Length: 160
Figure 1: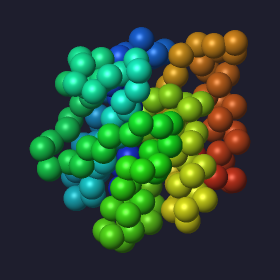
Figure 2: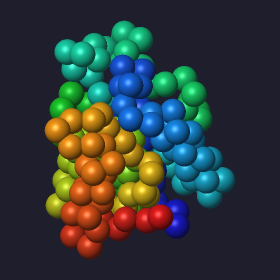
Figure 3: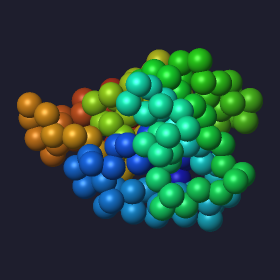
Figure 4: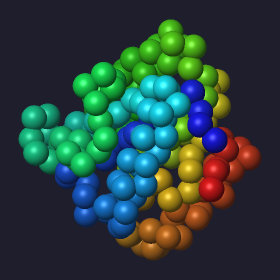
């Protein structure tokens, strides 16, 4: 199901070592194409921090993304895509109330976007297989399942 807008978070060169990155990026491109075909907007978030310094190759969105010049790219300096980025204002101005989220990292920026977006009154959604992260104390697979379980029914619609 297509939502009002697709929010692509932190699919950047410096995060390309995440588990299954290329597969997830390919699936995100399929989703981008579906949104474009439906005439829906796509917003790309680009994280800037000490490890992903502005202007560096690491900070750039991966070239393989099906991004067009007309797509909105917002810089963020925090794990929260809504914090001082203008994202909420843009969405409200465009009357976009349902948001599908995809990208990196499941337990940080994706989780924060879903929870904050929900708290701001947006209908949040995520499609299984369109987010990833790095292995930590638990495997990435366990982390993805855990977060999707928490989001489903509480913070977001989890779609297959």
